[in-house]
Image (spheres, rainbow, N blue to C red):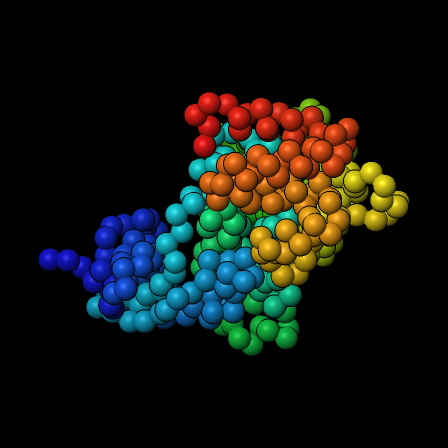
Length: 360
């Protein structure tokens, strides 16, 4: 007998956790979807599930998150329906090794902007990690709001306090030190710390907090023992050490105030390094925006400014979408704009790699 959740035909299981299961299913119209079904029904679990539904309704693909299609009740339990994202996770990409410098920065900019839009709504994610970054047509989307909550006084009334004082929620290797002590009191600066850890792993290929067992990982998180980026990977720009040093500061008050501030710092560093010849000092490419940039918006900027940063951003998006010939053309244009720029050699290596026979 075929299992159905509401009007959706279940095709298989994608994952399982302590609270429920995520299923792959097909809609009546033939669309593939992912359905999160709550299995462990208790008052607190149900309240957390309902909170996730409300937050998903607030944060959609326009904000850089996997969006909610529908929610409902079934004989299997309450459920949430989201698009089935086919581009894989950031974890699957990192399993193959570190990302390139440009890819790492552009990806971190996109994630920081998305999380910054959540922070502007008074929402903290509390479980940012490579497993919760999915790719849809090359665009990174933040997933899994199961531990997210409102943190600001203006929005806190929308969320029931579900984490008791002293309770720990999250994934150890991507937690800020204060999250180990009391997850109920963390704010947007805990997400800034997690975003810094993700960028660190993209650049080095290894988690900043790694150990032979959970206890050793927890000890490193508590002590905030992180090797300086430049000592792990050579040839990185010095400004990255400064940005990561602030994002990964042990004390919340020493970090960027929110993810938007982190994005602005990344933009300043990358934009100034990639400034095309002929621009006046202090004038940088306009990578950042509070709204996600569409391909047509990037194309407009490319035509208007000729910025190599804009060409690189478009090439990265097209490469992830599987549009290799277009990505190659964009990288060639980025190199033509500033053939002696600080990232020119990195672009040349990327072009050589993508031009190899059989590369897709």
